[in-house]
Amino acid sequence: MKRAPQPPGRPKVAGSPSGGRTPSRGGLRGPFRHPSFAAGAALVALLVTAALLSLVWSPYPPADIDIAGKLAPPSAAHWLGTDSLGRDIASQLLVGAQNSIVVGIVAVGIGLTFGVALGCLAAARRGWIEEAVMRAADFTFAFPALLTAIMLTAIYGPGLLTSIVAIGIFNVPVFARLARASANAVWTRDYVLAARAAGKGAFHITTDHVLPNIANVLIVQATIQFALAILAEAALSYLGLGTQPPQPSWGRMLNEAQTMLFTAPMLAVYPGVAIALAVLGLNLLGDGLRDLLDPKLSRQR
Amino acid sequence: MTNDDAGYSAALMLWFLLKRLATFAATLAAASLVVFAVLEILPGNPAEVMLGDSATPESIAALEARLGLDRPAAARYGAWIGGLLRGDSAMSYAYDTPTFELIAERLQVSLPLALLAMALTVVVALAAGVYAAAHHRRAGDAGVMVLSQLGLSIPNFWLAILLILLFAVQLQWVSAGGFPGWREDDGGGLAAGFAALLLPALSLAAVQAAILARVTRSSVLEAMREDYVRTARAKGLSRRQVLWRHVLRNAMIPVLTIMGLQFANLVTGAIVVENVFVLPGIGRLVFQAIANRDLVLVRDVIMLLAAVVVLVNFVVDVLYAVVDPRLRRTVA
Image 1 (tube, helix red, strand yellow):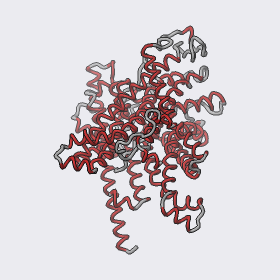
Image 2 (cartoon, helix red, strand yellow; image 1 turned 60 degrees about the vertical axis):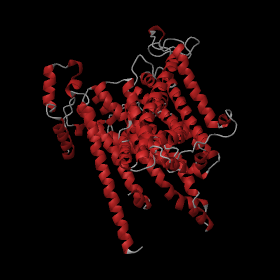
Image 3 (spheres, chains in turn red, green; image 1 turned 90 degrees about the vertical axis):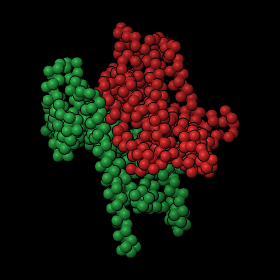
Image 4 (tube, chains in turn purple, brown; image 1 turned 180 degrees about the vertical axis):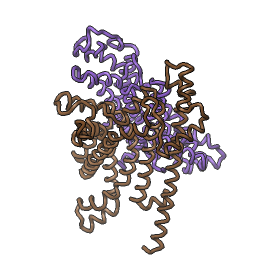
């Protein structure tokens, strides 16, 4: 199964290293003229602000139960109303943002760390090591995050850690393939040949030449995998395999809301909007970054 | 083409198929090893996991004997694979029924669901993608791109809930979930069955179609820039004729690849969406199996799903070579 390093789910991978191009005009203000970058950055900033704010303040403690005030409509006291246990929806949404960000950072971090290391190793060593890494990457695609999560849950029980590990494992081959393909292109460049001729070792060539040149491609992909991680965590939490109570999570809020569809339909709307906005923001940011970091690719689209 | 050329080409295709078949078998074997290692070796004592808090030394010993866990791991692995190959599956711990029987029953829901979702995906994605490419840089193109960006951002299970909200709660056209069955005498039937699968398939297809429409669009745009398109236009074919006769066939190769890669998403998406609509499919089965701590059933269902993903990738690889003979040379 030899194929271009496409991540399953989102076939918009930057295929070649960008050679370290940076947007030339306009300094800091330049990137924000790019509509999808600007919109994406705004939405992601909103997500991060919500998460950071909720660390120090939320209208109510998100897990506070108030049966007398259950299913309250939106009001000045409860901006988005309360759920079936009287918990404040707005507070749960704010604190839930933390959850999505933590899952995204850790799961993408696992993928980046192991995937890039393996991909760079494959490109530097070639031969059977490259073959083995790529076969292993192909193979890991047979186990989407949900299947891994189901297996781990069957043994260890549901939990945030299980879901993060499952999503992280799935990210490893995505970055391994991308890093290898991009690194291979760098290895054929003249300056790498020169460095090798000068006696530089494979490790230092990787750290000094390969990694800086494939960083842009990796950043774009990391943004997209971050969005996928948020989606996957929401699905796992919805199924009860992810974040456990009392920690609020958007996916589990949707699960709880589904039992109240006839009485309180809006409860099933807010958390979904939050997930969709976060994912949309990251996707737009990824699109924008790709255009800005690699003009060659954006023209091909 | 001379006979020799044809023979060479056929031999190349055969060699390619054999290599792909070997990779396919090796991947399946590796997948089975991983499933076995994770579910039977990692937990230490599976019998203890399955019995949970109620475990006593006697009940653990009894379950170990019943499941054959007192045998060495290699023997258990051999017995499992041997059984799978003979079509003679293990007994589910919770249902006391062969796992194949349980799976076969649930496939009657999951398989039609997946096929329906796939069909919807392909129809919508190809239409939208080709339309957008034909209207490149005009309003229609922008509209399709905005819609697909939205489709990419909406979780399929939330879309499923929204569809239930609209069609079951507000309009009350359909029931909020469940499956009447395919047999008329049980109150179900073909029409009722498909009606129950329509909303789940729609929520699965939306995300898939969003991705595939983008790939179709850029692939068609790419193909339209090729020299043969200019040639075809120069010899007097209309834009539409060129699109249908030349562009689409060449644009299909990347679309096919992405469809193959997407299939894993469809499988996992179906697990989630089945749970939203309370459909008695494979997705529900594996969740009940987790709730029952039925590791035997979890093992066999996961193996089946992984095998399906691997199989689809294998089929796509082969189709790929059939559509584009050049690949046999380069990929083989």
